[in-house]
Amino acid sequence: MGVGTQLQRAQDNYDTAFKRLKTGRGNLINRAQSIVKLGGIKPKKPLPEELLQQAAENAADENLLDTPAKAADKETKE
Image (cartoon, rainbow, N blue to C red; front, side, top):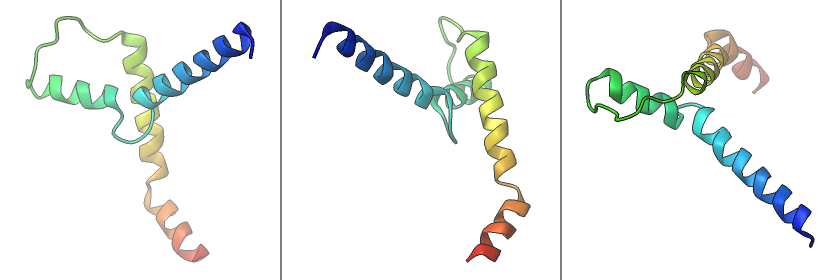
């Protein structure tokens, strides 16, 4: 394998790991923000605003997917 292939593989792994941090139910970014809002910790540095927005948007999308209509659809398919 060449250097270019290895670099691409490393980039893909980085992208996958970063995506897991900011997407999905209970992602790490939203959990950290919840702790800060509850007064549990005082961070030395704030998280980047863009990252917080992306995580919040994803969480909102996840919540939309968990509506009763989706649950009803799931039951009718079974």
